[in-house]
Length: 623
Image 1 (cartoon, rainbow, N blue to C red):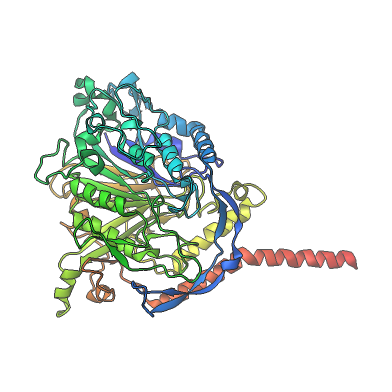
Image 2 (image 1 turned 90 degrees about the vertical axis):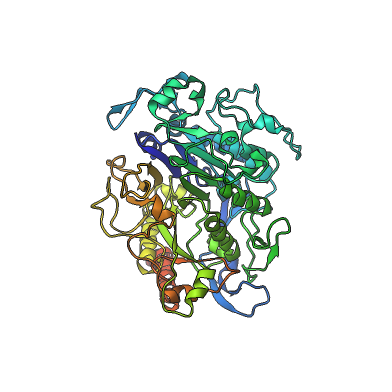
């Protein structure tokens, strides 16, 4: 039986949602939201007043004179913030989507997968997928949202309520807390209940407790796939934890990963109560609730860091940040507590890319706050977790990306020689975005762009423009698949991107057979169509050893010393560059020019032609 977890983002409740039937047919253990589960804020037009060239500071210090000109184009959109009532209504509308509700409510255990009948006994004979995830701006309630959003607390609570839609939540023997009380109202012993006797309860969820305190919706969920079908059927007391694929979710009182639950550090020598060879930990990060507002106009996007007084001198919190001090501390400690075989970090925004020369008010990504991204790289790679991977959303397309990372201290030793760094850590990022709208249909979330008469024009412009971007831009972090002969189900050869509606599936093979590097993780992107269930649009596999630096990944790698030496040493951290090397500055300028011309032709030229024809008709009628 396959061990699968599905990921998706960017789903508008007012648009058709054809992917849920496909997701259900794949029988994932869980579904993880990567952001924008709803679109609660309201589009109010484009801000043309900020279009133009602005000087942006390139250096990491506020007083630096190094700067460059950047074009603010296309114009950023203007949105009206969502109220708590609007958030609740939109979540109810998403829950009202029949195919989504059918997926969440699960399937009977006698249903089969790939022709094999399984009879796991569970509560009411139904297997339900576990829902997990985090928010991005539109389900947060504010476009390009940050900590200034006035309904942050209500937004956090509504999202966790949404995750628990369809979950029976018996109020007996669970922890409750006054929404208006910021102090801990739950005893640790109550939080750490024995889940063999109690099922999954929202009130005992650490993410919900943080939401009540307005700290954000971040958390970790552990899955243990070591149990067999017979183990599940014989353990009647633990049936509430059973998931599809011989897996079970592990409560935090047992996993001891979440620092807010265990209240103390877990010794690295302590033996975990879950399998360290058949487990997956998913860390969901909230990039909205504690995010610094994007600088406006000509203000710089980089700044000095402030020293964190509560930890070692090597841990600095950026002034321009996505996570906030509490979440950074939580994330660092949670990673150090994890003994899972695979560790997946979920972010609503893309981490690796540096796609467009705009400020964060137009195009959002971690690279717009470089110090925060550097801290993220350092935190992940210094933690020592096995097989780290990143999952992101937001951009309405799917991409497989990789950066190769080297420790700055190791690089210093290589400066006096022509040898390449000895230890190169790969860091893979999977972006899956666009469950109801994408660049292959229309990038816009507005329903009017998906209906006649705008639909043909909107669909054509979106697909052509983003296809041109992938052709001309030096996006060297995108992976290339040279052949699919060894692929189990198919996938695209060449650049690993897909512009259609999509969701991602991670399938884990924990086989320890010789030659498999301790097991493999296969990532697939599925779209819609007649063969959508059987043939993925993209597919790539990595062994656990490759993801953990024990074995070098085959194919193009950033092994040239000059690529790393072109980056400044940032406090002795990790230097991460695209796995196919750093594109030339000249090439980037040419690509940006082509993108700008293409955008103008595709978006504005048809309007000019239309106005010209209208004028000709008016003159003809006049004469």
